[in-house]
Image (spheres, rainbow, N blue to C red):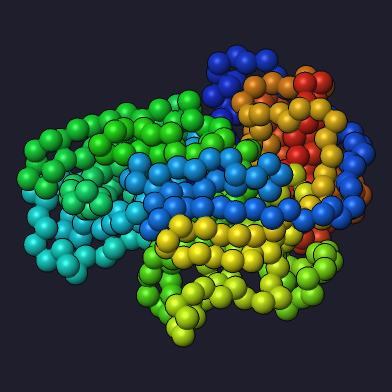
Length: 429
C-alpha cells in the first residue's frame, strides 16, 4: 500500500539532498563473504508476564530475553517512524476505538455531529502489518493513505478525513490528522471535545524517536516512551483486536517486529529444527494468539501440541520458539522456550540510519542513508551464504539494487563500511 508514496518520496529525498549540497556517496558493490553458524544451541526457557488482566505489554529479544515491560494504557495512538510512511495505529487492545466521521470531510469540523454514531464504521489496525493502522484502513492506494492524500506539490500527506476517537478514560474527541510533513518527519494533529471545547493543535516531531518502530502519543500526556529501540526487540506480547470467526475480538498474543519473518511448523517432533524448507511470512501475527485454547472443562488454557515457530530476524538469524504454558488473566504469563538455530555473525558494529525498501520487493531494492558512509559495500546473499547480486551503484545518499533474474524467496542484504555493518533480511516476490 505504501509503495507509491515511497517511490515519490525517494525522488524527493535524493533531490532534497542535492539542493542542500551534501557530499555525494558512491556505493560500490564488491563481494563480501558472509558468515553463518548453523550450530544448534541449547534451548532456554523464558517467562513473559503481562500482569493481572493483561495490563502490560512485554517487548522481548530472542537473544537477550525481556527488554521492557510497558503499561498498556499509557498511549492512545502511535505513528510509524520512517519519514516516508503514513502509518498510524490505535491502541485498540486497551480499548481505544476509532470511527470514521461519515457526514463530511474536514469542512465539517465546526459542525461535527454524533447523531447516529452507533452505525458509524469502526476502524481496526491490520494485525498482519504494523504500518497499516486503523487510520489507514480507508486507503484506496497511492495517493490515498486513508487519513490523507499525498500532495505532488508539497510532497506532504494532507489530511482529508475527520474521526471520532474514544479513549478508555471515557473521553470522546473529534480528531483530524492535519498533515504529515514528510521531509521533516513531523505530524500536525488537531483534536477537541465533541462540543468544540478544549481544541488543541499539536506538532509532533518524529525524528527524535526514529530508532523506535512507533512514536506513541497520549491525548492526556503527549508523546510517551512506550517501546525500546526497534533493533533491541523481536517479539511483542500484547493485547490486540483481530478477526475471530469474522468478528473483531480482543485477544492476547505475540506479534513480531516489522522486518522479521515467521514460519509455523505443525505437527513436528520436539527436536525438529529443519527450517530450510518451511514457508516464511512477513505477517506480524503468524505467531498470534491461537497457539493456545481455553479448555471449557477446566477453564484453563491448553497449549497446542507439537507446534513450533521459527522466527527469522532481519539479519538472517533463525530462532525456534515453542510455547509451554499460559496462565490466563491472573498473571498474564506465557512460558516458552527459545533456541538459536542459525545465526549470522558480524565482525563490526551495526550501522544506523540505513533504510531498505520496498520489502517485500519486486523489481528492485532501494537503499536510503541518513548520512554518508565511508568506503561502503553491499551484496545480496541467499540463505546458504552465496552472493547472488553484485551491482555497482552511485548516487547521493541512496542507491538501487536490481532484482532482475533473482528467484522468489528470502535473502540477506549486507552493507559494510569503515564504521560498521548492516544486515537486513529481504524478500523477493
